[in-house]
Length: 382
Image (cartoon, rainbow, N blue to C red; front, side, top):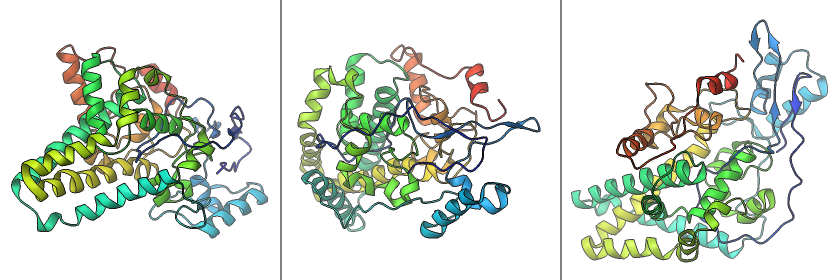
């Protein structure tokens, strides 16, 4: 998935280390966004000032309309871009070219973790099918409440902004509580989730990204979850979470991860029977799954780029509405450390409002947001 350069003014960062040797994956998860600091990402960057404006960074996605936008480019590079588009095409309603399609479901050997992950995802979708036949208002509101608890507090606030990016600090008891909420989203234990997300940012939209749409929309959305060996081959073992690994609580959650959602399901069944199980587990988990996965897929395919991030990340308003502000994804990739993703007043960001509330009552400290000078450096006009 190495990115293609289509102009002589484009430069490559060749500092990326060699891909680590294949290793058996550690227990991973039904994981989500993916990322950390972009330290050695193999990407195209730079550009030159043309008429007072900085020429936009070129990516695989930019090459799609090569005949219109890259006149004068060397013929071999144009031909290569055209061949890639002709073979795999563009993702619908976008300029993102699929460079290659990875065999995930057939033509490869599945390991036990792949089978278990696919089994869990399939089971939740099957359980969700009973939702229309088991509806009652009690079960519905349980699902809504758990959507907020596991999606907002667990995934976006805890796993993503707090644990993955250290955008703010919480008292340990509250940090651990929110992390436990994330475990109930059935997207994996905190260490594996955070590791994959940090690797996503480090190798974003390169051939080492765990989930990039340049291998297809559905690959970035969910198929990558079922090929755990591929993640290890691209990124190596999850050794980028030393800050979590040294804490006994996160090691405990890694060892006992699957028991906690099972226990929640048992409680729901005991309280409200099959309808509570269907809505509180099946419908709610599938809903949170796909909202989370849309950040990986849709937010690298559809939307606008406000910042010169050197990747395919986009700001997508409708994903932001569903995902508590996570859809302002280009903002996030520009300022990974920021607790605030909706940088404009009109960019709704429920997670940020929650962080601000925690800060106001003295529970969130060292809350990070970008300065004006940092914004200027990431501007296309810089």
